[in-house]
Image (cartoon, rainbow over all chains, first blue to last red; front, side, top):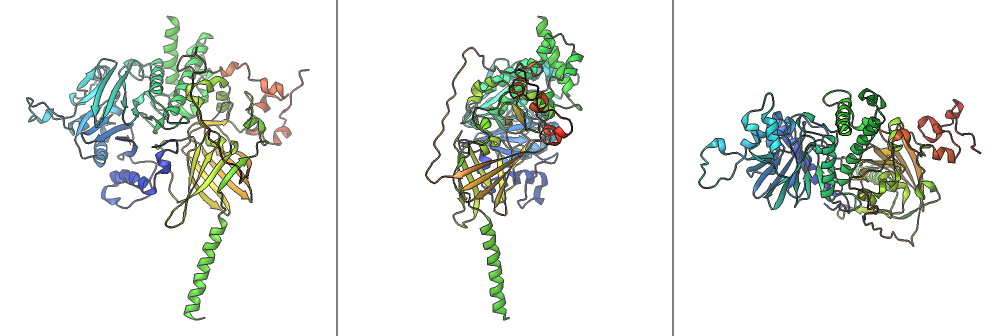
Length: 337
Length: 286
């Protein structure tokens, strides 16, 4: 893509766009949707949206979350496996991109909307073994699942842990882990104490694409999984790390592209807006704490008011009030030190 | 009337129909130069902090704008950011040209290049749909056009978050911008209508005039990101607390306006505001 001109979808031919959208429709409707039809922005629960990001990398948009797929001569690499119920759709979508074996699976973190398909995707894969290792054992013939070790710790320590097949099979405890696959470096960069305690940013260095997991989303305030080591401070640090890695092509557009855990494909400028929003909210709540406000008084002061219309919600999982409470408690504890 | 005569008459009717259609499309090509005397403060020195006059903004938009600090543009990530479509359509000189299918000679798109920031926009006229929401957004968005007589109506979606006024009044990434290009000989009127479900209570409408100049070209515009303030840590976000912004009333006092009038909102934009008891002026401090 040449962002000095425009994003690819601005310059793409209608046929290019139709092919992309038709892939999604074919996945959803199977043999019924043989003719190109206008795309639908909403997709059915069992439908996966596919967007070619750049180079080897595709963004796959599920109902639960986004996955990232890298394809090439050596096979397929999958970052995040969506929810368990979307496994078949995810595998079908991957098969429209490549008939090569799935060689690697990576979890940006362990939440079920990003790792629920671990077993199905990994078992559909095919690891390469050394000659002295038996490949006859079908149970072993699966793609390895990489993650930070805190993902494994959190997943296995759940009150009702998932079956063993869902667990990461290859963990790292250092600041980063490197792979080289399909002609480019793939770097797993641990972001401590952020969305969870075990977040990884996955950087495709050749394609210049970052898969951010839930460290960056475009749909709502970030979920801070405090029980598993998450913090707003860590999320802001992670966003700053992404901004440090990303290089816009020109005029703060294009260049490094960022696939969020939820929402649309972005570039650095949108991570900057999200980082700035969270930095402001942290500052507002901290100032209210320093003014002596209790949590109830901070709620009443509405420190997120300017952003709620875009990112807030009063119902369902992770309301604005829960977000404020998590930030308040984190900052209150910091102030007490 | 013979069958052949009927056929010829039919063909002529068809030709007349298409000729009329083609004539209804105004050629917009050329180099257009903005009339800078219009909205001079807006395009020149820039608006004051907390000057929200004439904007139908929500309370949330006002809250965000009151946290805005002009030093924000020192952030390395913002120094070279291009203008959003909201501003490019009335801010800066531009060149516009046709993208013609070389085989059918059909007009596929109008493309434009702006002077300030070298922003580029394509307005598709080939009937393609807008992409799905998860497609990338851009400062100039994704635009399609249709002819309304000899006026070109442009609908733009997939915008990045930006600003309705460059003193921090936010414009959401969920907004849609409608633009009309209306040509009168060597003059071009550009009407901009911003519909923002998040930060505007009603459409924000604005017009600008351009003139065509056959003797001028659009010069290049380059930008380099530099560290302007060495003491700032990466990730620093300059801001004010909206509830105690020290400059919140500076603009109102400067122009002897009431805070309510200075802080905008749809209710302050119309004559009925005064008729209903609204106060525009403030007592002079001196």
